[in-house]
Image (cartoon, rainbow over all chains, first blue to last red; front, side, top):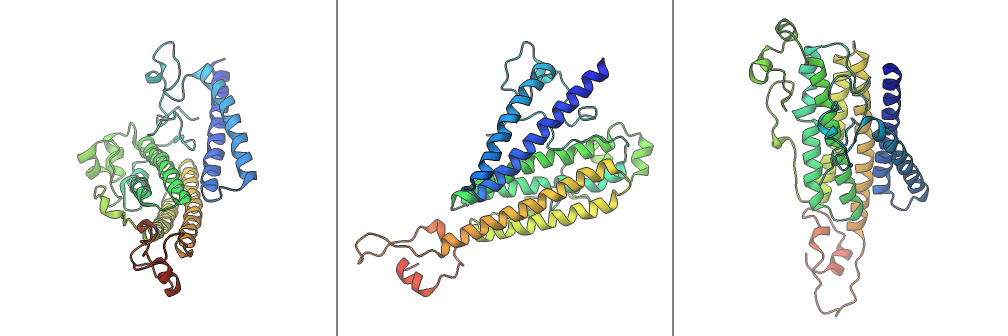
Length: 88
Length: 223
C-alpha cells in the first residue's frame, strides 16, 4: 500500500516536472518569438495540464508552493527536493 | 520577486556516495562558469536591456539558472551526505572538509571561493549579450568535462547531460535576442518634429562603441 502510494506520488511529481519543463522551454522560445501562435497555444495547453496535475498532487501529498491553504503547517514537515528520497 | 516551487527542475536521486565527484561538480555551483555566476549575470544585466525580447529572455533564463544552482547543490549534497571521515579523505575532500564540513559552499573545483569578477555587467546590450553567448558555451564545455570525470555513475551523468543541454538552448535564445537588439539598433529613425531641432537619440539604444552608418548618423543627429 505504501509502495503504491509512493509510486503514485512519483508519477504525479514526474508529470509536474515534465509540464513545468515544457512551459519553461516554451517561455524562453516565446520570449524571442512572441508572434508564434502555435507555440503560444502549446504553452497555454501545458499550463492547463500543469494546473490540473498540480491540484491532484497537492490534494494528496502537500503543497508545492507556500501560497496554498493548509490545515496544518505541512510546508515545513515534508521532504525538500534536495533531500535523498524526494525523487526516486 | 520569486516563488519557491517544491520540486527540482529535473529529478535527482543519487544512490552511491562519492565525495570525489562532488569535489569537481561544485565548480558549477560557485566556480567561474557556474550557475551562481550565470544567474547573477543575467538577472543583473536585464536592467540594462533595450527591448522587450531581451529583457524577457534575461529575466527568464536568469530564473532558470537559479533552478540549476539548486540542482548542482543537490548533486553535491547527495554525493557527500553521510560520508565517513575515511570517505572524505579517500575522496580528496580533506581541505574542503576543514573549512566547510559537508556543507555546500560556492567555490570552484580548484578551491577558490565564488567571485563576482567572473561575470560582467557592461550596461551595453550588445556587449552583455555577447558575453552571455560565451558564458553558455563555457558552461557547456564545463559540463562535458564533468561528464567525462563522472562517467562511472549514470545517476550523475544523466543530470549533467540535462544541464549541458539547457546551456545549448540558452545559447540559441541569447543569439536570437542579440539579433533582435542589433536589428533595432540599425533601424533608421524618423522623428516627426521640427527638422531644425537636433533630436537626441534614445541613449539606451546606442552602445558607445556601436558603429552606425553615416547616413543613419545624420538622421540621428550628433551622437
